[in-house]
Image 1: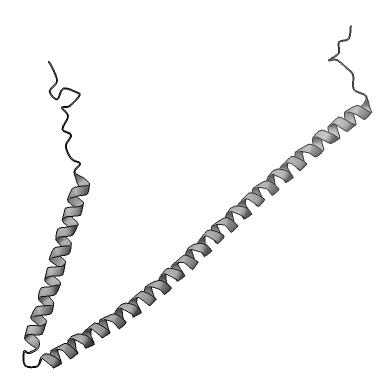
Image 2: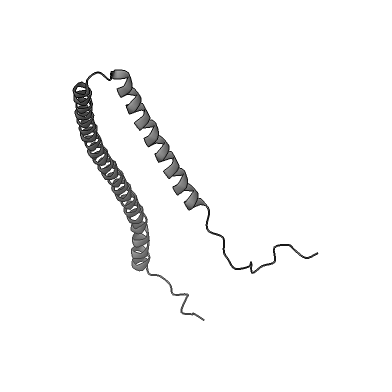
Length: 142
């Protein structure tokens, strides 16, 4: 008594099935290998592209920093020249008084900045207390 699952293979069918299964193994291996290589190449180029963008951003940042430094140096030279001209026009007060005034202005600016910084920091750190009583009892009951 034969069932549907016990079909005898002819040699031609057996050869066709064997060749298809034998050919499928190397094809799958080749496809998998090529897929891994393609992903690796894509990841490598993505990393290189990201590094290139970072380097371009760093170059732009360096350029802007150099421009800012030169602008500050130019402004500082202008201020120095203006202070020097002002001191020459005032005459006999002397360089010591000029130094004291500049030092006092610097200390005042730093003190004002420190006070402003601490005020802003303090206002950000502590929220205002709620006028409502707490909704949970503060002391646990034994």
